[in-house]
Length: 369
Figure 1: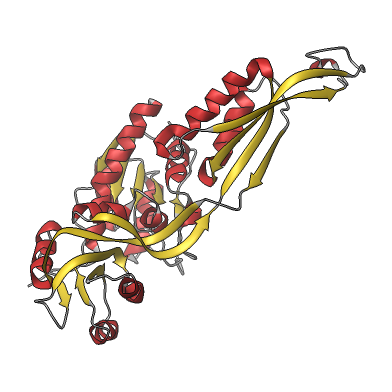
Figure 2: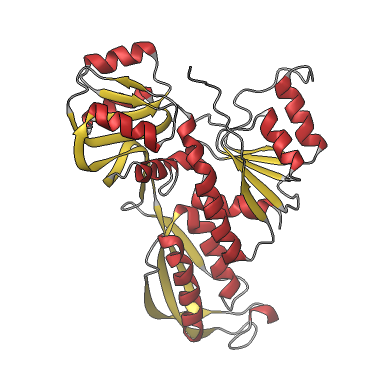
């Protein structure tokens, strides 16, 4: 299979337009047309991770954190980061990164973290935008309507993106075939008619291109008449972070200790004026989410879990009466087993001849002493 096969399937799950502005997601290095056989998933792309990939004959690295947060100013190979780029090119390894689009998508990073701490009745924390749904309308000869409808319904029902429901209405289509290729009924140059059905299907934005492709593939005409309309209601609301309920209330201090164990970290930072206070409602945002603490307060969180909290922001959190648990950025390593499990599922569904594996390295730069 080609790298583009995996990328296309992943971006159907977590489109790049779900990423935050200026977040450099997507292809980082290499070619999407490269044939791939071994894919390694990592949280970070670091020189030691690249060495691991080379040692294991990996030809595609899929990372959460983008390899190129900042553009290289030169290609001086005495700079370890530049040497890493050279090693990737030398060994023909393609690198792709999915960052905040994976954070924001339903069923992605923040849902995985919420499930890990066993949150219930979860909802979005920080509103980002609404992705509209679209109405795909296509005219289909009445004899072919079942084939087209069922193909589109099957597409819509995959991965739970919709229930595959549709609407159809019958009518008569008048037309004049202008050449032999257009003649299915009647004769060239003679006005004729046919029984047709107008089929309408609600489609999510990420499924629209595939829906159109599927429709054209199964439609009996080489140039079907169809229309796409952006709908003004419904759609998918995109949030960063999640908020939910614990099964049983515990104190802030007890919950912090639980988080230390659940996230398997050697230490964490607790920001709280009242560690004895009971906790029921918890907000969580993987990575560096300190600036979003007002949203956690607004939505009634007793505790907010996020990483990389700044000194002065912590003072503001204390003043606002919010308890915050900072287990660090590296808890996002949960993406490694989760993505491999997801990719293995797609491998079976699409009969991909490729192996997926997790990087075995710990890329957390911090050591607690």
